[in-house]
Length: 107
Image (cartoon, rainbow, N blue to C red; front, side, top):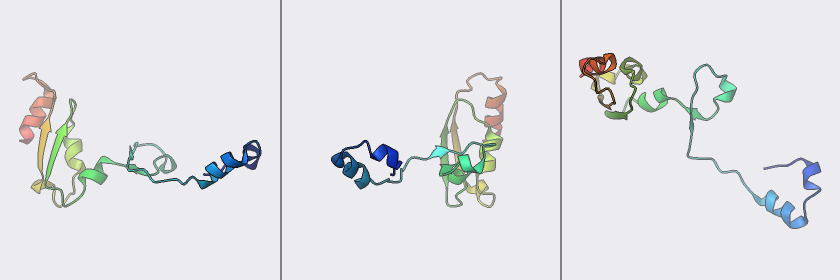
């Protein structure tokens, strides 16, 4: 981490040494990619396709109240998506709910 020299001048020698000895460590946490945002703002982000698009994935459990099945399925690897067992736990409890019908049809 570096500070402008004007900021360093106001620090004591011990504070200066402490700041100079710090290192940045990469974080295991990644933010979600935001569609429509410039690539420079999506640095070190992960998309759903990055996660679900792995051709080695065999099973996927999704827990959400609002599921767009077609969108989720489009994120799977094109060559292996018919081999992936996708289980969706959703909040569409009304029998006539369009999303529930869409999820049920995919079963």
